[in-house]
Amino acid sequence: MRRTTLAIVAVIAAMTCGHAAACSYSEPPTFRESLAGASSVFVFRLDNARYKNVSHGGGAYSAWVEGDIALMQNLYGDPTKYKTIKFSTYWCGGVNLVVGHHYLVATDASGESIQLVDADGSILDIEGFYNPAQKRRNLRSHLILPVIQAIYGSKPLPEGFPDSFIAGRTVLQPPPPPPGL
Image 1 (cartoon, rainbow, N blue to C red):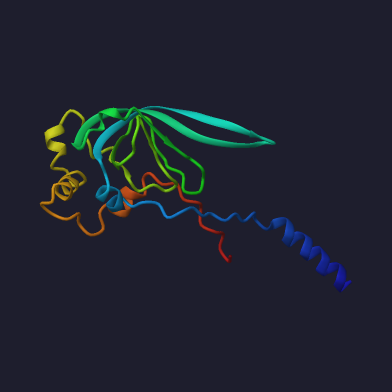
Image 2: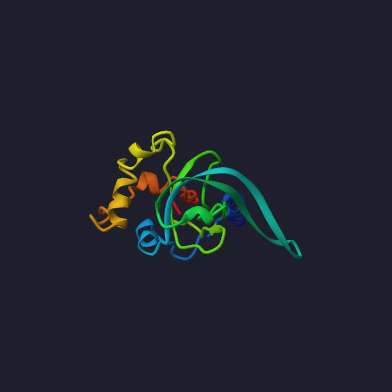
């Protein structure tokens, strides 16, 4: 009787356990690190996005999103060469870019495309804090002025820039583990 009860409890416990999946990726660049090595810093609008994938056979494939970008405001360098941005939206460390939103990016990418890495901190979603019709006013915003000051050496980037709310708007994180794990 006891053995049967233990067997039933074990089967029920095995059936109700959730699937655990590890989430890991290489340490991504922070905005501060990206800014220090950037050849271009600018604001762009994501105009469209397309899902792309390449089959590697046997059910294996690589997938990413590629989007067209429109330069809104240049802060440093020559970003006119950039036409597209590529990124992953995988549940672990994927980058969440929304068509129509405005982004501030610090990059040293060569070619016409910016390739983001998992949990890339070089890009900030500044939608709601940027108005393309008020470019002069944008230069004094709390998200752009410190970047300009840091680029041109008048002031270092403030400690904790960008704040976690802004930094977290573009990075997809896995859900926390269930209680008790």
